[in-house]
Structure formats: C-alpha cells, structure tokens
Length: 274
Image (cartoon, rainbow, N blue to C red; front, top):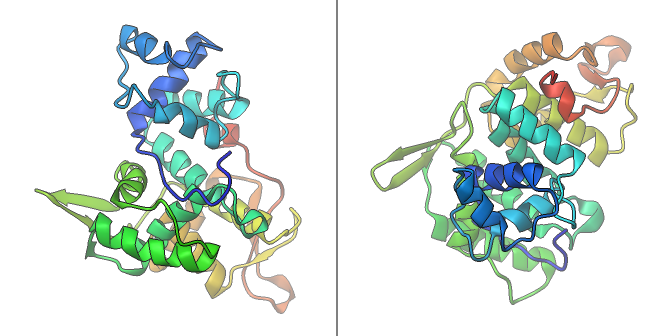
C-alpha cells in the first residue's frame, strides 16, 4: 500500500489493469520484467511497459499480492470483467475512491486525491475539465491537509483519475475535440451504489443490521461516490433493493428513512459467478 502522503495517481488505463490481471492469472508469480512480454504474446495491451505502473496500482488496490499472484479479489474482479465488462471500471472506480479514510490519514493518499477529483467535479456539474487547474486546487488542499510543502500532484495525477472516470457507463465525461466536460449522471449501476452504502457503514462503524439514516449528508456522500444527480438516487435505490436482498429500508422509529445492510457485500454478490 502507498504510504507517507504520496498523492500522485499513476497513469493506468482499464486495459492495462485487465492485461496484468490476465497475465498473472495464467502465469502466477511471473517476474515483473516478463509481464509485458507475456501480455504482448497474449494479444493484450499495456501502455507503460517500462515502469509497469499497472502492476503497482493493482497491488495498491489489493488485487495482486506481493508475490505477483492474484488475490481473491483480483480473481473475482477478473471474472466480473469477463461476465459483465461494463461493471469492471465501476468497481475499480470504487476501489480507488474507497482506500483512503480518516483513520490512517497518511496512507493511500492517491485515493485521497481521487476523492478530491470526484468531489470537485461533482460539485461543479456541467463544467469543462482542465487537469492543470484541478491539480492546482488539489495541491493547495493537500498542503493544508498534510502540512507538507513538497507534494507530487500534477495534471498527470488528475489524468490518472480521469482514465477511470472516462470509462464509467453511464458516462460522466464527454469529449468534444480536445475538450472534456463533466456532468452528473442520472443512473449508476446498483452494484456501485451497494458498495457506496457499505463504505458509509464501515467509515462510521455502523454495525450491519442497524439502520443507516438516509440523511441529506449521507445522500450527498452516496451521490459523490456514484457521481449521480441527487434527484435520481431514489430510483437507483429501488433497483438495488430488487437486486440485493441484504439491503432493505425502514421508516419505523421516527428517525425517517433508514437503509439497512444485513451484511457486508462481497464482489461475488455483484455478479453471480459460476
């Protein structure tokens, strides 16, 4: 895992990550120098073959072990990619967003940067994306947050996040010639929403089986993670209730609407795998 206030997001495309997972599924423990060669033999694309940033990112995200073997989550994510490819970038988007928490402020700060990119874009919907301007704003936020003057945050860091945001479907980024525009989406996969709900449970130490109040602040958190327009959240929730029986809603007790997760979701809950 990344340590010590490392804010930079490596430049990794979805195809890069898929390639390294596919290679290490077929050749577990393969030396990092041989991974690009095997990828080429298998007809897979890895853009940065020298630094092999996709391998280090996969390790940061918990998909590959130190021994260059797939973790259980890596296996499951690769299976999901094969069964439902549009869900792959949504889950990786969540993994990027999910790693950093207040409990360990100096660890996995690339995830903090990813959160900031999502926060800024979501808060300024229908806006043109300027990676340099975004990087500058995040840099000053990071200085205040970390208390450090020397930080590695640049337009490249922002682009590392944009590679994954551009891959989401329904889309949040539209391209026109050289310009990119962000807009909140009106739907997201219920699978992403269930993961976002679980994050609120874990960050706030809410026991499973106990209701999470669907307050305005929790609604906003869910919308920022899923990048949807708030007025469409309830519609996606209805799909999630139908799809995941361990998610219910209660309005009893005078506390208003409460979401109840009976247990923690697992990757293999998202897509039934044979």
